[in-house]
Amino acid sequence: MALLTISGDPASRWEEVAHAAAHLLQFELVTEARLAQWMKEEIGEAPPEKAWKPAAVSILARMATEHHLVVAVAGAESLFPPLPMLLRATIVAPEARRAGNVMIDQRLERPAALKMLDEMDREAKYLRKTRYGRSPKAFDVSLNMEFMDAPRAAEVLRAACAARNLRDHGLLSDAAEAQIHFQTRVQLAQHGIAPAGRAHLKRPSFGHPSERLFANLLDFYRIQWEYEPRSFPLQWDKDGHVIEAFTPDFYLPELDLYVELTTMKQALVTKKNRKVKLLRAIYPHVNIQVFYQKDVQDLIFKHGLRA
Image (cartoon, rainbow, N blue to C red; front, side):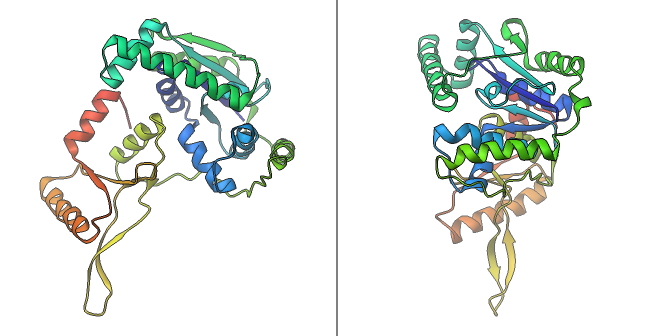
């Protein structure tokens, strides 16, 4: 397997670097939200923090038998021992730069941004300690974002991966995966956890490029999402058969919110708005938000996303 792990200082833009690097390398991107969803499929719930590492390694090892991976998870450099097919990168930035990023993202004045950044640093330190214990930080590449943006940092990482010939090692062998899986099962058994082996990488077939861009944005902010998980009947014939239904594009479980993206011609937008209005009337308990073409364009411009 080729495995690139990326983590870094809070508000250093390391998540953006990971997205850009995965795009350049054409590797599968693993985010915190995506890994959390796989853990839910694997063991039915979030594991206790002390069992988080073996649970993550078990899942990632199985994914690595089929895909090259960019793992964008806090502390990801501590998941695997040094391997010839592994490159561990960290993204850092001066406090002033990170505070400036918080000011932009949260629309805060500098004093409030510095206070929030201090809280983010403490939370990151606590999370690392609970998940990885006293595992020392060890990196192959460290990039300072003081005078660099995410696309340039991603280019550096692509060059580093090429220099290490990561792709030449191929995917993780079944024998190596079985060995890792045995070790992690022993560790998980101490916490009463037996992996079910159900978690697999599923690629949704998006109907429009804007939907893929929106999914990338949700991944960046670590928001769990499901693509077209449910259809809502809107009209029935006299025999009770459904003759019209509406399927929102996304569902965000943590927010209990459905999202519909609309980037079509105005005539089709009017038809979709009628369906949304009807859905709200029939299912008043369902929360749904519509993003129109300008909304999607603003998101693309703000975050510099590409299909």
